[in-house]
Length: 369
Image (cartoon, rainbow, N blue to C red):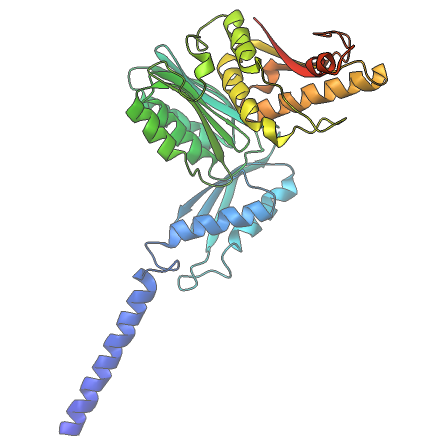
């Protein structure tokens, strides 16, 4: 009798052990567990779509079911997106932690846009959302966030649904940008491809919080903050006293001149490749351009008179284009940038001395309304 009781106890202990193991498999601290599964699958799907060259599709997880929406380039890509999502985490099933089904009813072939640019801007008692978004679902979520974040302002929808977003996390990154804008006295946030640019003015505590928030943005995004603290530009003391947010075109031109006073953008000899030593100056120039691209900004390249004029014309234009491309990569509106090369035709100093020739090899900026 004692042996029979012992066997029964051992049986139930075994059953209990199996139950605990099963519960651990479902609820434990691993990616296949119920509470971590949607987050883990989200990351797997994002990586799979990135590999399939479809990084801009929106993905929402409902347990192990994926809902995908957005724009692809061809009808065949709709099925390719479904397959990439379905196999993102293996064969699937509750224990494997995989995708069990994929809804691609929100995916369609359509127009792609490059660069992929979106922005949110506080404009008095209005909040303007402008630019490219990956899906109607994305548009709706962003408008909901704007209305909730600015209940006393009118949220204006100037967005368009096009393909080409840099990541499936685009909508979440843009929603966070709207929320962060609430704490600034004025400003805007732009996303151009994978570059986030935050522009505006706030107190020291707000600026510190934003710097912390955007110190490590989610891949593949990178961020730059061009913020003033109570109107003061701490990063660029040369610009103190200039109102770049609402000033005239002449004020913006003056800001470019101040930064270039005694400084030049350097290039590799005979090339349009920007020398790395000029990166800090370019970043300061981008700060001005970001605040001033409500105007047209002309980037002009110039050379000395050494060598053939035709080659100098080509080189000066290529260098101007390189600088304009860098500014655009930092979030400056590409539509507001004009690049032009003048070769040796507009010398600043006589070309009779090495010093004069060096002064003539330069990049200039002009600003017009």
